[in-house]
Figure 1 (tube, rainbow over the protein chains, first blue to last red):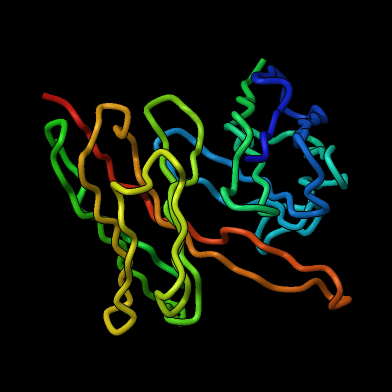
Figure 2: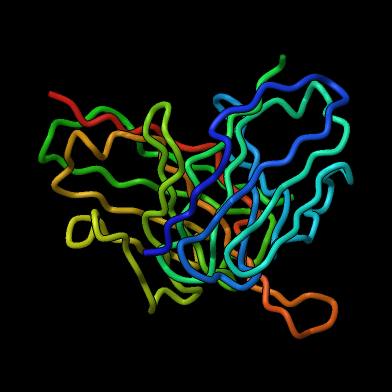
Length: 107
Length: 127
């Protein structure tokens, strides 16, 4: 199975900050990397697919980059509604594994 | 609007069985692969199973192989997960997710992602 490792596991930031979350795969996954946002008690929501494509309706302050084994999610100018947990996911091979999550908290 | 609504969760004793359902609407259900993902309380997301659009292809995570069975009824636009021999470690919220396979605008890069999720149904395995 492909292991996905996110860092950091948690992050404190302020409204207006720029934050970056990284995700590393244990082997190449080319560009089969997606990012999801999850708020407490809610289902995950797709933000970014195929490493860098923004899902419809997702604000443009979210962006993704990377290839191979190393990927990043960047949130430019944090808004109050962005405080949540973020998960990366590889869809290169079954089982489609997720990172352990990054909890983004208000400083 | 795409909607996925899970049901069937609840409290079950170790060794027991449950069948989860996921009712789909707002898209052509029979054209899409569907997946199950679970999340133990306070933990991360774990992929469980998938089923092909016509139901002929299925895959499972090793930890549920031989115990869980995924199926679908395209006439009813409903996905199922039959869970047998349940264990305490199966306690989780179970989500169904719609899987999309497409290409980018260049037509050269394939894209695979879960673009819609249900609200989840909680399964608790405890005596």
